[in-house]
Image (cartoon, rainbow over all chains, first blue to last red; front, side, top):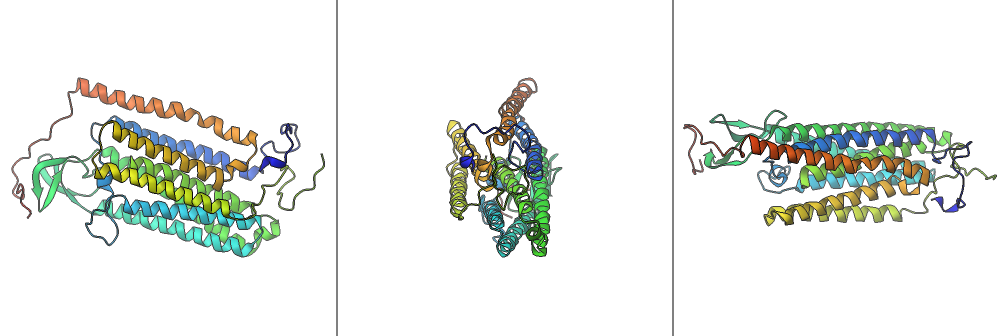
Length: 247
Length: 144
């Protein structure tokens, strides 16, 4: 908090960081800015393709399953759980940073472990969701033939229903827009890659903390940098959740 | 001006260290705000599924979800990433480039809409559902 800095304090007179940040932390912010633009480019191109299409699948119908609940119709329930897990792991990360400010090694270790657990749970949920989308086949009318397909990057079954046409007790649909699979698997996959990297970074932090590396250095700033990355992953999920599951 | 370097100040480049907060009250308060905003978003998302909302009301609901998401983003960045604790020169360096998103989003969504309109005008309206060729497995209306 800048409250104890006098008004009119000159930041740009040299000899100090005008940003009041160390080099490493500033570069983490700059990297996160560039990553913001990468994710934004992906999400905005998804939006462009979506508004240029006459038909787009309704997420309430696409994402309506839950593990071990069979065919029960539970729209958005599972993704809400994933969102909760990621928000919770962001909270445990910020608690780890807080303990780092107090130079409390045991506290940092404890909260980092919870954060790693949250990240792994999120990845497990995503793996289940992808497996379910890819392997669960539904009847689709392709070139006048009924085929049973799952959702992949090349085809999916989320098109409009063909009125009155049933196949073994299931409503037959048209193929959905190919862009849906491209963007969904592409963007959630890229986000999942970020989560994986974040978990690996946190595991590295955990071992460094246990080693006493930061106690020897005299500060836990490296945990703060890993924390910035982890919160960014949560931040991106806010918008992935918005663009794919809610709107 | 001579100042004693605070024990947690990392390098002499840093004029003052980030104030270690006395307790975790602010963190948990932010957690509850984020949770409530997420539940509100879900309520809006499910409401248009349950009540089959269309037209302007649907746009209104989607706008509501976007606003809630922006607030979630602000809370995550300012509290969890301690952005609000940073000094003004740094905050401006990060925030000013983000202004380009206003153009970025508007221009691309406008372009996509215009593409759809042009295609519908010159290629005709969206194709109606084709009637399927006769198929052995097909039993219209039957449950097996």
